[in-house]
Each structure stands twice: as structure tokens, then as C-alpha cells.
Image (cartoon, rainbow, N blue to C red; front, side):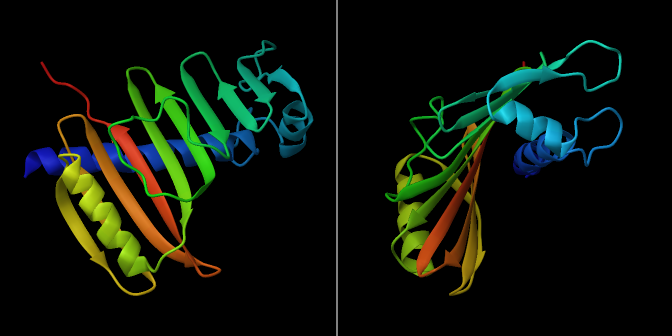
Length: 185
């Protein structure tokens, strides 16, 4: 039981880290965070920002086609409308249109968020994803939901996976949050 709780804590940290990064980049994080205008000016091309007011740029922002990435020297975040290039190949995904793909790396840990528009009901999507993750050898830790939304939680020795299902214009949005499990000596 303690392993699952520990994995859940790591899982919860990934979306939180993405949110903190996004808020700090839009000026909501306070301190020396760049304003939304500064970020938008840079996102039109590329550049860097002084986030701590010491006169030295310590956050680089690059836009390459449909991908925007942020790097402060210790943490990296990339956001795209595609599956992140380094998304774990042993985590199966439903077929559909990817509307968001994010990858975050902090030190030795990594995590990903992928949102897919799946043309099926929530129930059909949940059943399919559960079968895919079961078939990939992950162990189901939680499952709950209704006709309008659901959540699945899975874990393995390598990853913790949370999948959230919601309805959007007749499609089911299938949102995967995947985080690496830290190895312990």
C-alpha cells in the first residue's frame, strides 16, 4: 500500500509542476517571473528572460514549428500539439487526434501529459484504455466514473499512469498523465 501512495504522490507532482511552470511563465508566479507580454514576444521566435532579477537571463524559450519549450538550466518543459518525442513507447495510447503533448524533466525525473480526442463514448474509451494498460502489464490502482467522465489509475515498477476521461463536442477527451517511478537503492 505504501508503494501505491508514494507513486500517487509522484503522479500528482507532474501536473502540479506543469501548472507551476505555466503560471510562472505568465507572470502569475510572482517575483521576477516574466510578464505574459514578454513570453508572447519571445514565443513569436525565441529568446531568454531574467526570471530572478539578477540581470542575467536564466530561462530560455524557443519555438520550433508547433512546439514551445522552456529551459531554466535545471528543468525543461515542452508543449506541442503532437505526441512528445520521448513519450514512453511501452505506454499504449488510444487512437485519435492528439490536441496536446507535454514533456517535463526535473533532475532525474520525467513526466508527460497527452490529450487525445477519441471518437467513442466515455464507457467505451475507459474499457479500451483499461484493456490496453492491463495488456501492457500495468496494475490497476483505481477506477471510477460515470457516463460523462471517469478516472483510471495504473502503476508499474517504471511508471505511474493516471487517465482522465471527459466529453468534448461528442468526442471523449482521454488525458494521460505519466510519470516515472523513482528507483530506490
